[in-house]
Image 1 (cartoon, rainbow, N blue to C red):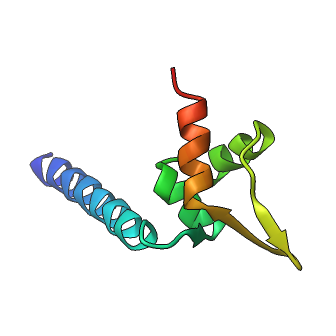
Image 2: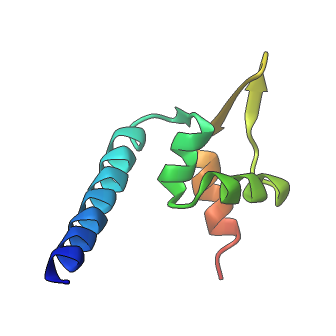
Length: 81
């Protein structure tokens, strides 16, 4: 029982560490992949796609999609209350 709880706690710590490291490395770039943009915003990829339907602007050139850090920040500010 205690071993299971300990394993779950360690898994949560590793997951949080991975998310924080990904945010750290993506926050220095202005243009990010959609996966990086989702991590930067702290949401899932699917939620980022919902944000796109709500007006988040995404750049697409020859099939390559990128999202701007500034655009994510502005979108989140505009939709805050």
